[in-house]
Image (cartoon, rainbow, N blue to C red; front, side):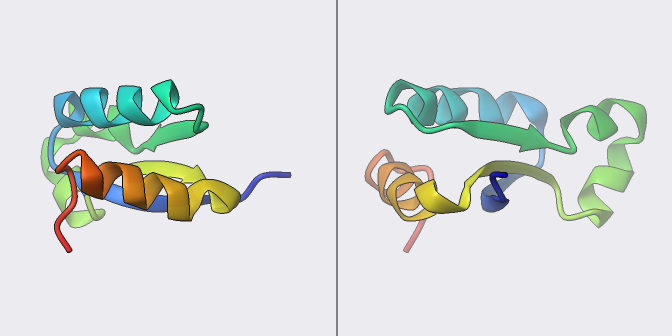
Length: 75
């Protein structure tokens, strides 16, 4: 069973599309958690830590490097 870990958080669902596509194009399995809660309760998402881009624990290091190189994460 794969354990998912959060590699990035976003305030709005549309912000996850390109980083998720970038990871998937590199062969990394990823999942967007709490995306739909933003549509149901917009302010709940902010108090819940935002919308989370998650990858498997095995891919965490590679995903972080890809997102940093692409400019989606700061050091």
